Structure formats: C-alpha cells, structure tokens
Image 1 (cartoon, each protein chain N blue to C red):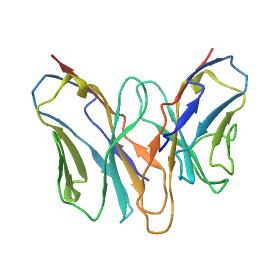
Image 2 (image 1 turned 120 degrees about the vertical axis):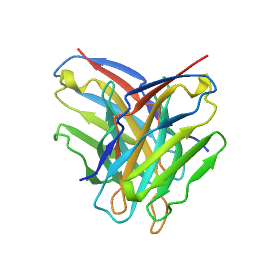
Image 3 (image 1 turned 90 degrees about the horizontal axis):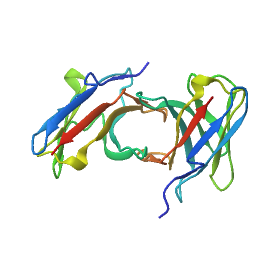
Image 4 (image 1 turned 45 degrees about the horizontal axis):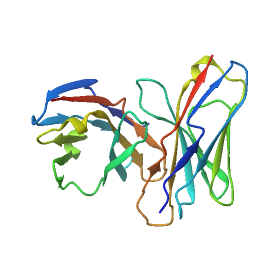
Amino acid sequence: AQKVTQAQTEISVVEKEDVTLDCVYETRDTTYYLFWYKQPPSGELVFLIRRNSFDEQNEISGRYSWNFQKSTSSFNFTITASQVVDSAVYFCALSGGSNYKLTFGKGTLLTVNP
Amino acid sequence: ETGVTQSPTHLIKTRGQQVTLRCSSQSGHNTVSWYQQALGQGPQFIFQYYREEENGRGNFPPRFSGLQFPNYSSELNVNALELDDSALYLCASSFWAPRTDYGYTFGSGTRLTVV
C-alpha cells in the first residue's frame, strides 16, 4: 500500500521568509513518481513538479526547490523568499510505476503574511 | 490547448438523490481519473477510465460509477447520495502510452453539497 504523510498541517510565515514543506512517503514499488501540487482557494490542483524514483537530483525552479532523498523516503519542497501569492494548500502525491492513481497527503496550508 | 473543464461548478442535492458530474478532458488526453476531496483532506482516488473502460478503482462503493465517451469526456455518477458524499470532486486527464511519463491535468472541480 502507498502512503504519503505531510506532518505539517498549517504553516504561517512572513513575506520574504524561506519555508520548507515536508513530505514522507511509503511504497513497495521500485519505480514510482512523486509530485507536488498547489491548490489555491479556486480549487484547481496546479502541477508544480514530477520526479521519478530513479532521479535523485535536487531541482530548482525560480524560488522553488525540491530535495528528494530515497534513503529517508522524503521529498521536501522549499520556497525561498516567500510571497503572499504563495499562500495555498500544498499537496505531495505518489504514483506507482504500474498504476496510475495518485495517493495524496493531507496537505499543508501555507499562509504568507505581508 | 484547452484545459480540463468540469460542470457544474457547484451543486446542492438532497440525501438519497442521484447526481451526474461532467468532465471534458484536455485535448489529446486518453485517460481520465476522478478524485473526491473532503474538506480539509487530500484528494482520494475514485476510479480511472482508459479507452472507455474502468481500469482502476479506489475504495469507493458501487454507487459511484462512471463513463468515458469516445471523445474522452467523462461522467461521474453517484446514486443514493449520503451526507458524507459532500466534497469537491476533481477530474484529471492524462495521456498514456507505453514508456511515456505521467502528466495529469486537473480541473477546478465540482463542489457537491448533500443536505
């Protein structure tokens, strides 16, 4: 069975602070994919990143960066110099190599205050 | 490139009624999945359709059923509505072919309230 744990339910920061959202996953698949999605109040899930299990390189995209560590089954997401527009619920998700369903964590509500 | 569109955006139904939610997949996508997101929770996988057949199902009872049409649009039907069915229902489309990466595009969802 697959499981995704986002231990942080809510995080509140002041604009320009850096913030890291934690994600820990469990799977027995040797091939799998990890995702991060952003959900603004409008409800749509906005894709941020997909990483497969064979690619452990960290990735940076503008103010966003991701740290994938297979040894600890973690896929953490850092926002540098946070902005008010970053306020949303962020979900980490996992998909197996042989099926297509996404298993989501419960999400982390990030509030960035001006 | 069109995105995934869902209708209606909001819906109120009475317990025991039936409801049909609709989804138009992104152009070029051949797979559609449905998710239920209760308030304060992450989305839960309901089922997936590929080539008009169900090819994966989550832990949902048979009163949740679906259809995928030749134009890759889809419907989610829920019979005998219960109060706990109140949630945001999300549709996601993707393109599947051997040795391709997964790419899911989500719609904005239908907010269903059962009273």
